Length: 275
Image (tube, rainbow, N blue to C red; front, side, top):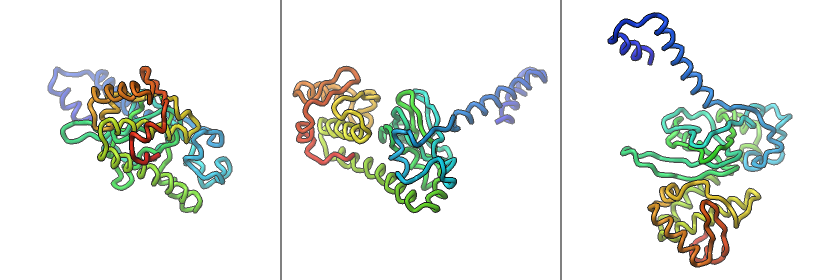
């Protein structure tokens, strides 16, 4: 990077040593800022974390177990629109959503975006990098959020020392894969309206699992992002929400959704909705 930069500088009028020093300092600052952005920003008490049960077994002593110190509790604050990782980056960590929400995105060779999923508190991200050692997705914060970084090599070592830990993590990671694949299979067999209904019911059940209201919640993603995930246009998503509201099944005010008739939505979906 430096050689290219100074080769370009060399084609211009002579540059003073002080100017070259400034250029080097600027490049080093950019590199340091990027490293800081990728690193965990603090430690957190896992014992009092609302998402703890999604990360580890109940019998794990996070304070006293030397085998897991440094594995859990490494959190990082993420600004809205910031990437936790990008496709092509080296895989080092799994990530668990502590608070906020995220989207995972695939970009095809023509630059078209496909949203693979939306993640909320207690859900894993980064599984895409395990097989090849590189991420194949982007993970972007939908709002100001907090994510916990789990160094994968240390996590594997902790699992080797604790059968309970290993089994628990296998179950959790399997849950994430099954949930996303089951949702995609359902989407492939559904009409546009059924896809949106399945999406809302799935989100409702996931919020309920975390102690939040299953009937009242905010859509942190835009309607365009919902359409990108479900294979629908923005107009179709808006029209379908309006139809569900007219039928009295939901009430939608801006980003806030109120489910008025869960049983009616389930009948309309006509399928078992994965959690």
